[in-house]
Length: 232
Image (cartoon, rainbow, N blue to C red; front, side, top):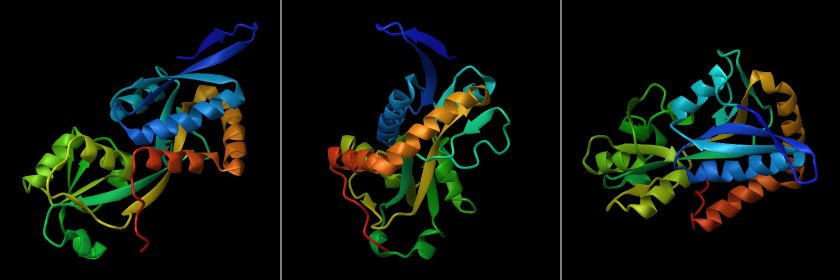
């Protein structure tokens, strides 16, 4: 929960406890953005890595102060959650396959296939709604099951998938050349931090005018040597 940190100059600064994904390069980019927003707003943050399903529940219960990145609507049915109105990172969703000719298939053809997604990622649930979907605990399990023919398509956020495949290559896996979806993500606080949220929103708006969130995202792609999607 929120603590107060006393700086060397005698000023006090809030310290928010924020939940985030355990192993996610996209979360690393989002953390960089929101940390800068916090610096501008005079708010320090400590990031706790944990399963996504656990993180948002702890925020709702008031045991954590916030969650790093969630889709629009996460607060719709939970009065304890306060979603900031300014997005700080975008999730580009990528599709991966193992079958012959996968790269040349159309979206309608792919939608008839069996999908695998990592557990607890709401943006991926949103874009596989109505499809045949299996959720797995880890990224490594996803690509192993794809290779074994347990499903036909893996859907993941682009940055996370590319880094996972680079760290643990799976022969024969290819990426569909176009983005499956693109979704803005938002910082979420417990509702008791409404004043803190307003300060962060002002900082994020300033950063958006400066183009910083997009700059940090592009720098993240370059850092991991990830190629952008082909236009539709």
